[in-house]
Length: 406
Image 1 (cartoon, rainbow, N blue to C red):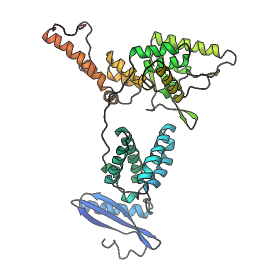
Image 2 (cartoon, rainbow, N blue to C red):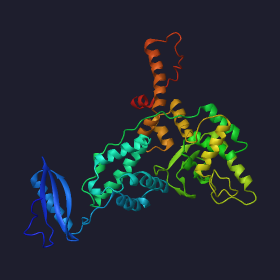
Image 3 (cartoon, rainbow, N blue to C red):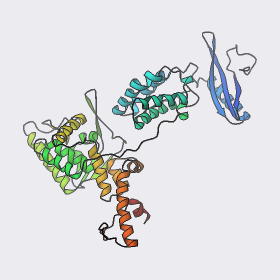
Image 4 (cartoon, rainbow, N blue to C red):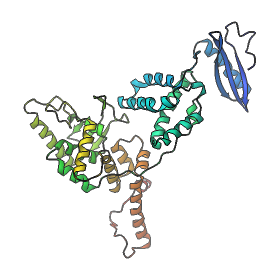
């Protein structure tokens, strides 16, 4: 290991040394006292020249002397996860923390929780990811485990528990882009028509989801103050999350507010919904700012997301339609793209922080638009072909790429 700097390591003064590990790669080690009679070391990896490594060592010695680097064993991955989850809880939504704790408790800790941080490697993480895949988890789910681990281990680096983030050396599976499914227009219309008499709140929820593309938690959190009648706009600013039976209003998934334009038909539906709610509350009166989707007489209690999903599933099953509530969001996106809306506008309506997400998820809808464009351009350049598609040359389909480039 080599001698530590100075005359003796036994005088409890902080000492360090440098060990070459390859071309321009070094290991820095600093004596950080003794524990139970054993020497405790702080270790760092460094890449650069020998002179630069010496400078880095001197800095590390100073940090250890000033107590800026942990002098204790970093512990296990489970220890880190517990500390990290407690630290980030105020920064994350209740639903996100619920998912973090679920992944940590059911998957990560049982498999690799006992691994000391000092011995955790990218290869060990890759083995863990493969085991998740072998259990049948989707690539997207495995990647969520990776992102959690990368964030926790990144914080461990900042805390001085490990020199490098081992997740940087791991390779989670790539995303598999499966085509999303959505009900067709006739099915959505049937669902609204068949539920508006016996379950008018569900009918309103279906219409809102199909027109706005909002997530179910966002719909359940809507209050009448979110409807701007003058501007014909619906503000989506919150999301309802239910954990262990407790409903909590928090920010949207992307922590952004967005305004969604409404047409005459949607506004008329909302006016009817408001009138029905006022009539129902005639005996008890409405609260100051009622929820749009509420079955309580006062409008003070929102529909819960799982209740919305369950009622929708029952209605669809009764009509022989195979679908689930989230597919209404896909319906809004694919129908908008098929109608010629540009991807950036669709992304804004859905609340995607990055339009590339919209491009990736709804690529199949863009491919359909591209085929229409191919027919139009081919007919312009080569002339119409007998038996070919009839084109409306006065209003040709133009995807957003060409519109922005024009």
